[in-house]
Image (cartoon, rainbow over all chains, first blue to last red; front, side):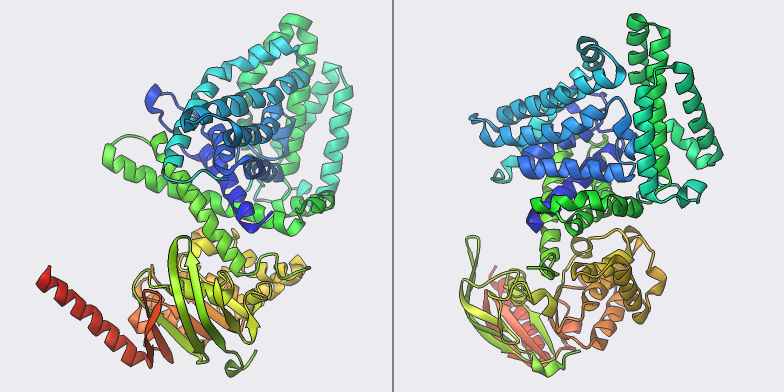
Length: 180
Length: 202
Length: 241
């Protein structure tokens, strides 16, 4: 990887961490709903930096967490997080970010908002759940449908985050040429 | 500096990082084979007592697990309902035991030692152009820029509040992200100016 | 350390474009003085000039030679020869602690961590900064950060030190301290700055305007005519506009 991609990946990894540590962010369209912006950072890394660098930034973030830095929202860190029932989601972040980035580059949709929305729904929700829910089922000894029910409590929040990611992407790309 | 590592030294600090990681891997495999809740409970109790003995800072770490509480509650309920109390207890105890064990390793191992310990595992990755030097620079960059980006976000937040009287909004994100990309490209340029990766093998 | 007179920087009929903007059409100049200052308004081409010397930018036409090396062919070796200190320390500092930052150059040249750290400690001691060895970068003041940037580059003993607006966000005492530091270094200096006081310490000052050299000579003469031109231009606009 060339220096520029390494540094972009590293700074977005730092960004994902920072978004997990700052106090709550208010969402204008759903006033008062506090969100953890960390997964928003994961989706945006893919959409703004592209599949390869986006996935690298998430991988790097998780690597630094595994080394012991308490950077997951809520201040968790260390190898312990990869032993918890939610470890599948964390692994899913890597592929979700890559998928969102890939779709953002390839989807034949003219509107940046719509393209980013579809990319974040598929990458940021579907792909992440694809890893998160089966692992939850495995780690907790649940059947898949029960694991899905258990994980579904986060679905409304995650859909909201996809909409936000699309809004952010639209405004971001309005001032910059999309990354090729 | 950001670190999840305990400031004061404990007996576990003296164990080499590689030994702790191997021990963790071994114990994890064993825990997967045990279905007996009483045995798992005993293991959990031993680890828990260890936390209590490692000092106030270590006990504080137990609180961080509370973010997983909703998950444990749902898992416990589902399990209790489908396979009964004993199996539910076994699963929850095993999860908690493994998380606490792994955290024990992280808490007592400085990040640089951890990095050195896993270096041999990473070495094969160099065929994908990911050498240890690049990776360690990337890790350092992450740790260096977390406080810098938080400060930047707080400054923007403050300016936003001064203008609107409201809390940080996602409206601040696009400009903030643009700033991060620009910053990254400047940092990359400065690294190139120092000959990053050019000084060594060709 | 290489004697100061053996290196020379030659910019030979250089044309350079950055994006759609033409920075230099046909620039030629040869630099052999110990300390050289670059003067000029924002956008005059000072930063591009410095980047040409370090090989961060390569000319589209013509060539740049540093100590006989053509930059287009020696990009890999240039950073050893030409150290670059940037305007904003936050863009340059890569590591979370002072020691790691200074040790980076040694590590990048293949030294083991312990050896690199020892060399870095020596450098910090030599420049009276030994009490910072374990400090975290985000706790340093702006002036301390800029000093760290300079030390991290000087530690690698380049022949030439190139600096882009090194003092722009510093208070007066810190500026004076850093000027003393710069004047004590054995390296040849090429400094772009708006700081007339700093430029007045240089052996030669080059005044760039719109990508061309409009003044070149002893510091006091060039600074005086720059000041006069700017003042006159303002009077003129005040009268007509």
